Image (cartoon, rainbow, N blue to C red; front, side):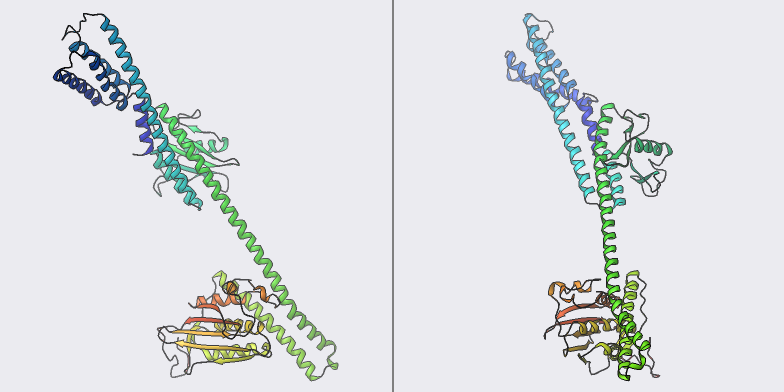
Length: 532
């Protein structure tokens, strides 16, 4: 039974109304059976005990059916006592007038006892009703607390309030222009004609929202309305209006429902305020994070661009203004500086554009069959100019290895990884590029191992985050975008990339990429072209 029906039933019974007819039948039957029992066991002469036992029907009636059946039980008990046990028997006349005083006292005691028992019953019913209300509000509060989305919260509020009160409910919230609209309703989805969408209902809801007062049936304002409207108010503001369609009930029933709806409205207002504050906090956090990323990006890019630009400008200025003073070797060195600076700027711009394409979802793979050996050759050519005194070794399988992927993006991944290995390893150290393939799962594994400073275990996952740089590498220039782009490209290919400790010291970057299980083992046609 829903809460409102339970409250109605218990309140009606507590006021002695709508008592079932069978209650009086049971009272009559009980007193009659007691009378027959007294005669059967020979208690006709023990008037004191007979009068006391006749109090049992009075007490039972007061406890289970209220004051009306209890008074009826007391009256019929006095009649039975006089007719069957007071001389002259089987007559309503009384020989000793003192019995009349006894009858009056008995009837008064019976009524007083019934009144006390009835009050205890009413208090018990009120306690049960309040307990049911408290449990309902607690359940509603617990459900609201677990919701973090505003739309879901509003639907839950309308649904739970409707189930609690057993009546249609609606929640009104202002839109961006400040107009109050039905945001959620207990009516079925798509039912635009359900309760709460009428012009008069919206007009009353607007009045309640503007004035912050309760209105509708059961209140002191607009009491002729079919609904009851409660403002969703917190200390700071009014967030909206909660409305419930009310039927023509009694005054005390409407007051009980009004109190319950006010409690539900308070819970709903608090939940809405909490969700709004959480959303504002989330937006503030996103804004702060965006600002932090923007600042980090500008700082990194400006720092990274300044160094190659300075080298390019200085070398170009020297060639233009003092060309006759330089030997061919000097000109070659300055030209190399210009080229190295341009290549460094090109890598930076490529990384920035790659990150933008990854985050915007615009990255499209131009898949084709690629020879892994050719990819590594291109990578070595691009890093040769700044590899300095590094010993780069390549270990390939005996058979050619092909992978179905985007050749340009895979080259960018390896260029970034090998460039990092060069930057963070000492002179005369060795960098090993190892390629292995496992034919059973059709997976290609590429490992780039260096003998550099290494990466702490706690940072091996974070180095793939945007703009993150290890504390041990702050002395080396960089933007923190290279490995983040590598991770994005590898994951787009369906692979994984991890950082591991190198057995000889330093770091090993491991890339696992599927080799297209359904592709041909030898992807070259007779004309020597790559088959798609």
